[in-house]
Image (cartoon, rainbow, N blue to C red):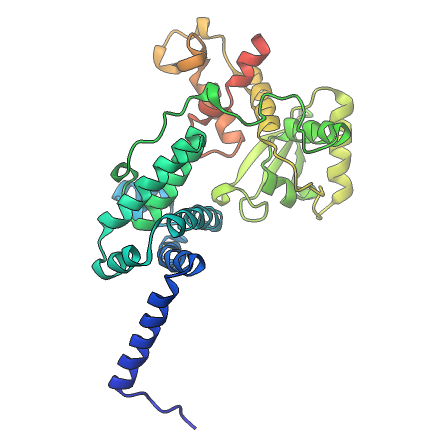
Length: 336
């Protein structure tokens, strides 16, 4: 038997009851947080549905990227940033403020709340990169440019507070550190790629050089991009151990990856090794356009532009400048 369709007046009354329940809930912290979260998550899911399957590079050219989310990971990260923002607003705002904001549907009201939150982040001592990340996420939720908000602290590479310059990761034992340093510094794989890589991705060239053939979809690469990765180990024994692991795995996954692994600094070691293998001496490069002159705390360092592009591609980056921006510090650390 078909469900009886409600009349227009019944639907209006039901909507009014739901609205009243929502307004009443704004008197509690959880109610205010839920109200704000629902607003943001609705926008995020809508942008994700529109953006999935569309290349980010193309949408940036048309200006549509400000309204789109392209990956599950971005959706997850932005939802987390919005949740933190919702907790802040639920603590500082009162029910009347949120009622007015809801009725007016005015983006300026949301921008004002975001500016208050960013000021709070700055006063709380959050790092400049974290401030910038939160700012970008909140801009995406609201569908505005991040320039609509107040300026966050300037990001300086020298001030980064992560553990990239430590020889070991404090979250893992020395033995575990040594094992994953050996693997990642030889392959340059990201964490998701390490978890998905299979033994049949190993290939050997006629000259004996081993490579990994990375399949974007199968091996969970960023942007589902395919690439070839040369294996660069410290010595012959390390190479033999790694090759043996891949051969034993066959078509199955090679590694059991610890959740605590943060492989970026090991990827930086791989980047350094590959750069030193393929780079020309800047003194011998006559065309200035083929040189990169670093700035900031790396001022005075000159890199081979072609080598930087090769390394960036091997690491799975879409932007050719990624090596000098995020990995060149390893070259300086070695020199010192």
